[in-house]
Amino acid sequence: MQIPKAFSTALLLGGVLLTQFSSTATAARFPDPPDGGNIGAVGAIETAVFAGGCFWGVDGVFKNVKGVSKVVSGYSGGSQATAQYEIVSTGTTGHAESVQITFDPKQVTFGQLLKVYFSVAHDPTELNRQGPDSGTQYRSAIFYTSDEQKRLAQAYVEELNQAHVFRRPIVTQIVPLKAFYAAEAYHQNYLELHPNQPYIAINDLPKVEHLRKQYPELCKR
Image 1: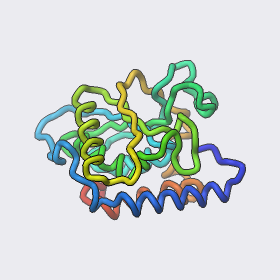
Image 2: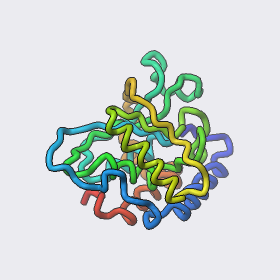
Image 3: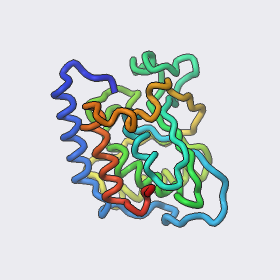
């Protein structure tokens, strides 16, 4: 989410990309997740780790999903030694800006989180970029924490492909989580703390609005 030199142009481009994504991948076209969206009767608190561009917006989206008790912005894919914003921003560390989501499967399933991830939180057809941000640190990735998460993620990507939801190929990586490192304190809860910041207002707040409009049953009251 570093602000490019051509600040206004890049922000406008980000807004255009978001509009195009929303118009070509609407909730009506999205199939149900592989678990059918069924809420489990039992189950411990679980975690999921997703990467989809700047973690500010992804964090802000999932904080509004019911059953989610905590979302932490951070880094996954690289080593602890390089899990620092200024180093990650070089795009040479292997890290992706990610969010760690703590959720109650009795209230929201991993499959439902996948649906939000693919249809609201980011555009899974953009390779190593998202809106105005480019680099491998902004790649689309699911860092699974169990064989079941891996199975569900792979099944949902296949389901989306068969349904031809997107006009371009899905480029989301599905890889095992080796470690998650929390980002610096000033990155946490950034959207809620800075709603008037131009980057947030143009690129991320529309995602939260889209979530509430398309999936009111998945939103916190």
